[in-house]
Length: 105
Length: 210
Image 1 (cartoon, each protein chain N blue to C red):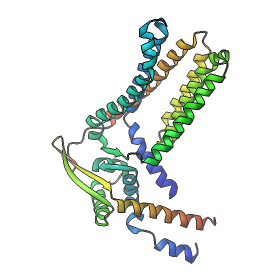
Image 2 (image 1 turned 30 degrees about the vertical axis):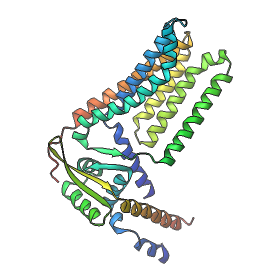
Image 3 (image 1 turned 90 degrees about the vertical axis):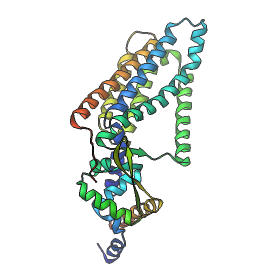
Image 4 (image 1 turned 90 degrees about the horizontal axis):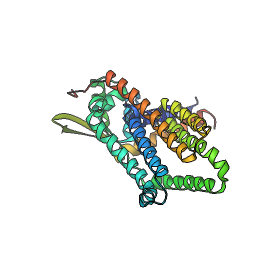
């Protein structure tokens, strides 16, 4: 890995780059919306961990979190904002570029 | 990294198959189409009912297709989403819808041309293999796209069924009815097994405790 690659790596969006948040972001990028229970099952995180990562993504403006009642039961719905979608696409493009450079393409 | 992201995306799409309900729906759809096909071949061609049934075949297919989606979602809302979570998939954008329409049109025209230009004798033998093969290809595509390995087995069984039933000394009409029923049974069986396993392994969640 040369200096240029290292410099590229430092420019990666750290909000998304964190492994747990990358999983959450990928899921939310794929779907229109998902609830807390689904994210819990798919990410394999604990409730507390998931909650904290969701809050970080929400603070960055990448996702929205809505609470509602479904059949008298509380439900937390998460969806990715247009800003989040753009950030995710840029992150993917960035990582792809780094990988290509590292593979000498 | 790129592959990991793709894997997570495919797994997320694969959630549609997690409870076996989608397979049960597919099985029922093929059973209805098979039953309809049976009516078509058993009713005398001259009767008004037969003509009506012939024209109604595409309509039945459409009703089954849309009914399948709605029924699966209705059931999932009451069962799956309470156990392993709710998800709503992205609506396809115009570009994707156009791409899908073009692929469907090309496939449909190719099938129509194949059926028209292949001799009746050859068709009698090969149409069931073709239907089984086409169904296997579509299922294989779903298996890869949605990362659901059991669908690969269903694809293989569908292709084998097409080959096997085409060797029966029966009329092609009856053969296609039999193939549809058999394909439906395979989907149904797979769906029921997955559904039972899903019910045993999961339970409804009362509180989110976020």
